[in-house]
Image (cartoon, rainbow, N blue to C red; front, side, top):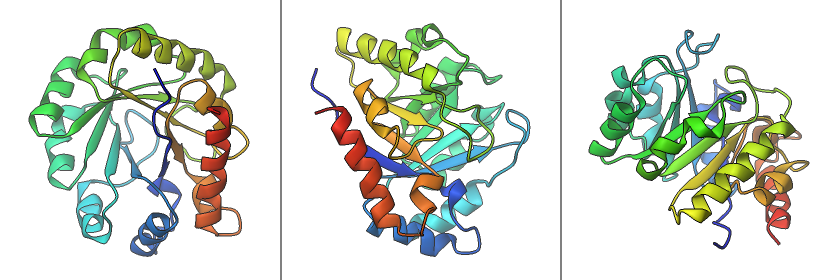
Length: 226
C-alpha cells in the first residue's frame, strides 16, 4: 500500500497554559493537521493534565480535529465526557484497567474514531485482536506522563511490524507516533510507517516560530517516504 498522508499533531501539553486559545490558533495557522490532547489522571501516569471542561472551552477556537489521548486507568468513565466536549478521535491504552473491546465499542457508538495506544514496552501482539475495530494505532516512543523525554529509537521495530500487519491485511488504519519527535527523527518515523506525528516541544518551542517548526517536522517526515 502507498504511504498515507503525513499529518502533524501538536500536543497541547506543550502550549502556554496562560495563552491556550492563542496557541491553538497559532498552531492551526501554522499548518497543523490536528490537535493532540494528552489526558492524564495521576493514576495511569504520575501526572495530571486537564479534563473535558478545558477541551470543551477550546472547541470553538479551531476547526482542527481534536485527538484525545486518554492516559487514564478507567477510560470508560470518561469517554462520553470527552466525546461531548468535542473530541473527533479518542484513544485508549492497551495497558489500562478497563475492557479494551468495550472501550473501543463505546467510542464507535458515540460516532468518534477509536484509537488504541501501546506503551514502549508493550508488544504489538497486544493490539492485533483489536486492529479491525480501530481507526488509529498510537505507538509511544517515550514512557507516557511527561513531555520533553528522549525519543526511543527501539520502538521503530514495533512500528515497522505494525505497518506490515496493516498492509498485509488491507486495514484502513492511521499510525500515530508520540514522544520526542522533531525534525531530527521524523524521517525515520515516516520511513517505518508512522503517518501522524505528535510534536510537543518541537512544535511549540525553539524560537517560537510555530509555522517554521511544523514545516520542518513535515519536511523531514516527507523525506522518509520519498
